[in-house]
Length: 390
Image (cartoon, rainbow, N blue to C red; front, top):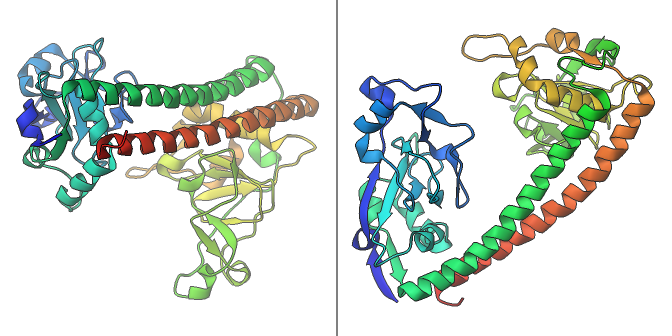
C-alpha cells in the first residue's frame, strides 16, 4: 500500500454556504439542502428533516452542488460522519458544515474512502486535527491533509464489498427494529383509533382525573452527599424509551428526605415539560426521582393501563406541542399536563394492548442486542480492513 494524502487522490474538496448569509431564503420545497443531521452511518437521508432551496439559489451556490458518488463528511459539530451520495440522488446542495469530496476514480473508490473515514485510523487523525472552540470543526486544508494507506483499486473493491455486505446486515436489522415500532403504532390505531381526533368516539378523561400529578426537584449540589446515593434521578433528556431504570446521576435517601426531590413509585408515568423534551415520556421500573422539568404520576390502574396512556400521549405528541408556552423556551406546566384529555377505552382492551406491546418489545430487545453485535462486527471488520489484516 502507498501512503497518500486526500489531496493526492481527489479532484475537489469543498464545502457549502448557508443561503441566508447571502440574502437568499429557504423554500417549502425544491432542491434538498443537506446538513450534518442528514448524514448517518454511511447513509445520506435527503427526504426527512431536510431544508430546501430553489433552482436560482442552487445555481448561485454552484461551488457546493453535490453529485452522485461524491463523498460527504461532516466538518462542524458532530464531525466525522461520512457517506457516499447514491447514484439515484436528486440535485443536492449543502451548508458549510458539510465537506464535499470528489474522488479521482482512477486512484480511489468513493465507497472505500467513506468506509476509511469511519475507521479508527481516520478518526484518530480527525480528532487530532479538529479545532476546539464553541463548535468543533475541521478546515478544508485539514481534510485534504488526512493521510490514507491506499491499496490498488482491485483491493479497494474487495474491502468495500466486504464492508458493504456487513453494513447491509446492520441496515436490515435496524429496519426490522423500526418496523416493530411501526407495528405497535398501527396496532394501537387499529384497537383504539387515532387519539388526536378520537375517531372511535371513546369516552375521554383529563390526565388530572387519572392520577395525582407532581413535578420533581433538584437537590442542592452544595450538599455533596445528596448526589452520592443509589436512587436514579432523571432529567427530561433521559426519557428516551418506554421503560426507564438507569440514570446519569443518582441521589441519596437524605436528598429525598431533605430536598424538593420526591421518591417516584415503580410503574409511574413520567412526562417531560420543558422545550424540546416536552412530552418525552417513560415508565419507571425501579423506585426513582426526577428534576422539576418532569411531571409524574402513578395512574389509577382501575381506569387506565399506564402503557396505554404512554402510547396515547406519544401518538398525540405533535398535536399536543401546540400547548407549549414561552418565547425563548417553550414549556409546559403541571396544570397544562393535567388538562390533557385522552380517550379512555375499556380497561380490558387496554390491558390486552399492554400484553401485545410487551411481547413486541421483547422481540425488539432481541433485535437490538443482535444489532449491537452487528455493529461490533462491522467495527472490527472496518478496523481490520484499514490495518491490512482483512
